[in-house]
Image (cartoon, rainbow, N blue to C red):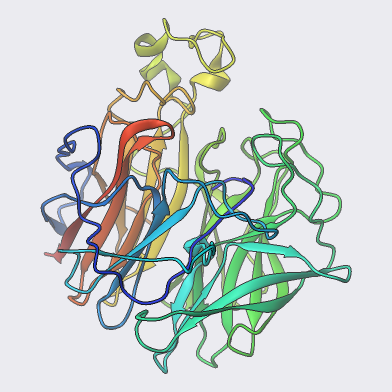
Amino acid sequence: MPLVARGLLAVQGDDTKSANAQPCGGKPVQNVPSMVEADGKLRFDFGEEQIVLDGGLQPFLFSTASGALILQAQSPNPPNPSPRMHYSYAMTTAISRDNGTSWTTIPLKPGDNGLNLEGGAVQLRDGALLALDTYITPGTRPDEGFGQLYTSKDDWRSLQGPENVRCELPGIDFYASKDDGGHPHEAERLHRRILELSNGDLLTTFYGCIKGDKTPSTYMPTMMKTRVMLLRSADRGQHWKLISTIAVDPSVGTEGFGEPVLARVSQRWTFNLSHGLMRTGRELYESVSDDEGLTWTRARPRVFGGLDIYRTELWVDMFRNIRGRNGRMLDENNPDDLRGAVVDPDLITLRSGLLVAAFGVRIPQKACWPHGQHPWNGNYVAVSQDGGKAWNNVVRLTSGVLTTHYMGIAEMSIDNEIFVLCDYGYWGHPPRYVSGRTIKIGVK
């Protein structure tokens, strides 16, 4: 998500309350998947869509070796007061140990905000689970920040932490930018994924500013465009060092590079970037490293299935009588507000080697709330059989519905079977909920 102040969630023991529910205030929308692009080499079998978390928005998903699925999403409730940076809504965590059939919410410790799973999680080869809160906050010395590490040795039945972990961040500027509402945002943002190298070192990604990053976003002059950077730890996440900038370009998009996700593809590290939620993001970008993240190819745009968010002529007639948030009409004289956006990608490599991406498309970029009727407006899954060089199979999971466009994907215990999360609704307008379904991908 974009630079937004305040974050959250914790966990200690499974609750007995099921997260499955009908959405408050209405019946669930029934979405019928459709192929946007297909090369005939893959077959997709879709499980029944179900509500997995009533009230949730912007889900994140992580799976363990046992097949447990761990979901986290924003709730409509305020967070607990805390001096540490946290998100502006409380977070709800739920877990499924039966392949997504039923879900159990996990309670917070009283008065605690706990882990914000947006920072990413990993299961190490010895079975231990590690997770980072999304916020890196200023340290006591220059070029230093502190994250929060959580651990579990019993498959997320209990979660220990937080433990403060030090991040060496040469040139970091915690105070360069406000958030996308103009509020203070004195933190960098860890996002999506932690990966373990063959020698046991860990890699993870974050976005923010270093000294000299002073290009304003196009719609919020106090919010600076961000860059995406890579951290490495040689001691199981106790200490992290900045090793490279993956992508930076003040001319890209409306907020620079943010919301990264990292995946291992063959012997290459592939990086997808997006310009995310609550901002005027544009197309996704990708970059590749062949040396464990020390250097990266120049980030380049990636358009899936011909979903070009600059093709405003395809939807201008649908919206020309609607005003955008700035009060201007959405027509040929207002191309910036009329354009679309692709937000917050997720990316996983399946055990078979298939690479799966999930992303949301907003048409138009902000007027999609509450005007989400364009058929491109929705949630997507794409599959690559060659490590991300080509994406010849793109599936539209939702179309023309109200959604924040954030998603989560995870591989299940059966090879080439994934669980996919979408959400319905948006802030302040119930009903809102997280839905999930399985997708089996068959190779013909």
